[in-house]
Amino acid sequence: MSTPVVDRPANRFIDPKVLMKIQNLELLARAVVEGFVSGLHRSPYLGFSVDFAEYRQYMPGDDLRRIDWNVYSRSDKLYIKLYEGETNTRVLILLDVSGSMNYGSGEVKKIDYARILAAVLTYFSYHQRDGVGLLTFDTEVRAHIPASRRSGQLINILKTIENVVPSQTTEFKKPLRYLAELLKRRGIIVLISDLYDEPENIIAGLKALRSKGNDIIVFHIMDDFELNFPFDEAAQFEDLETKRKMHVIPDYLRTKYLEILEDHMATIRKELAGARIDYVLMNTSKPLDLGLFTYLAARAKTQ
Image 1: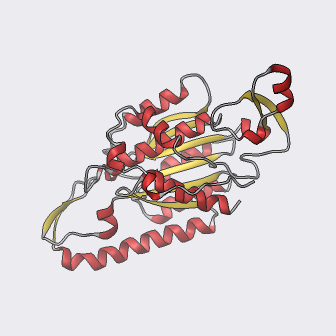
Image 2 (image 1 turned 135 degrees about the vertical axis):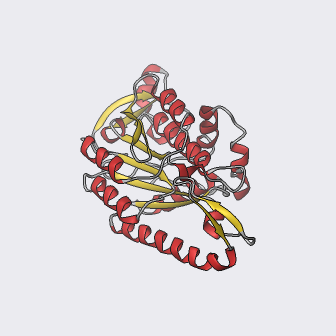
Image 3 (image 1 turned 30 degrees about the horizontal axis):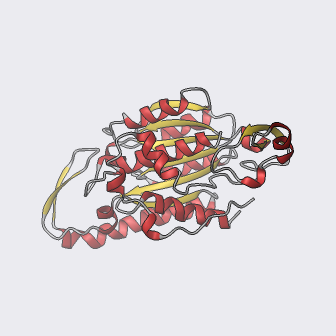
């Protein structure tokens, strides 16, 4: 079932630099979520089901059409019907905390943008009554909070997100293999990363998770300078993961770099599309909520 998405004026979206000034991660997430985010779930097994499960009290933002007016007439309280698919959805956020995520050409580093995105999706999922969890990784799994709706889960996840410190190199094979072996129930898996690894390592792990029936969304976090390479003066570049330094003359490197980048991204997009895995490119210079809105609007049209 499609979730309607209402057009939102472009000037309503929030500049990432403004979001960075909100120190409390929960308040930040709420500011974005309450703005417009809706419709993360996708049928057939995520979202609406014909099997009635239970009631819960109406909360602001719930669809008024789902209020049970018969119950209201008896109790003078507003309740909505929950269905089987809405009571057992599990959302797991995979957050890349490798060293390359620490890059930023301006005020907003990739890890800052990724933190906000992870917090927004966590907050949204939790308040949609989904079980939500978090896994952070670089070469290894650094933290794993299994998806749940237990008391304190939201605060625990947000605190973990807030405290990540990128430092190591990137390795998708081991963390994704660990997850594929661990997960017994299907759900939504959201990967937030700059995908700084060989495409085959990323794709193989995600396909293994997809084959188990998981709905997977990949948010590719990139800095504007990485995407456009606007450098025009000779400079020394440093790899944030290997710490290797290289003197570069941009005019000679720009064309080759952009060709390699486009090939990398095209390969990933093609392979993920073939596996029915959603791919979303997020530029850290652009409003985060605009990227989410654009993606969710497109997703709703495919339901």
